[in-house]
Image (cartoon, rainbow over all chains, first blue to last red; front, side, top):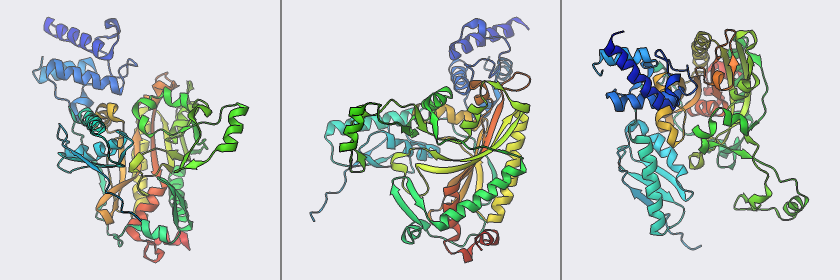
Length: 83
Length: 400
């Protein structure tokens, strides 16, 4: 993982910790939907809104269904030039 | 008899235009803004709201109501996420011979009697039709080897709390209670209880705290029966029928929306693939049943009627993950459709919240196929009328 990718993962870990209201150390680099009780349906929508605010990600049915893990969010942000 | 003044109408323009896909949802939620609202309608343009009030109100109260309406609209519309509508089956153009609303004729014939808003008693025609439809859904359950269950009408409050029901659907809850165990209170009730305008005149302090509610769904009982233990055999298929209760305020206008209705469910608990494959197989088998019944319908994605604060996020989540599909039967007399059943997938929500464990220790996934028997009968009669001679052969035969 290069430095830029690592920085993005770190940024996402912080974003998820805030959105899900959990300690940063509970957010692993490959955290997925359902791994934490807080990342449930409501938690997921909080994550989506944080991604919208932080990276300008459009919240729609496709992004809601696709962005269900930190690796998936990283790939999406890179492919869509948000990162 | 003196002429009654017309009921006052409060008309307002929402600060945010209500998008077409939310007009119905917002309209139904306006019922819960204020007890004085007798009827709420949102124009198709989403730019006008009319509230029929039960009586003239001072300006200050009108301002308060207007502010609450704006709050509801803002909460549901601001940042609204367009649902992804997916149609799995479309048989809405299936030819049906009837065009009228069967409701008035059912009342006139004594086949239906209204006890209160959303509460109806059903005569032989409707009862036999519902029995027939239920037999069809039972055959569906049998095709999966579903184990029969019987569940209570009451459900403990702590059960609903554990699955977040109070947060998601507070508006539709129906509470039960009883008189407090206090001789004076019971004697006083016995001596003076009376109904005034349909309401019992008993002081609220006479009632015990709420421990149980009338159950809003059938499948919850199964999930609680399976809670806090490994799932037997790794998967369960069950079926049950039960009375369900969802209070819908001024929306309880006809057989389309009942406070007390009957639901037959086929319920799947197990691994993700098992639940999803079973739900899909059930849909295919139900399609055959509905073909033999001759029902004109469509199966399309849907969302549950979450309350205002939860609606935007929960509905978007359900839509994105295609968690719910409704069987929407055509109502020819009003050129609209009515949900008569649904195919639901809850992911591992109940498995996680209720600690239902698969053999590998991961939380079980759940899903259910649910049919509203009263709505099935109503939609069928709306399409085929009350004369069995005009019904499809398969249904006629059941009445011979």
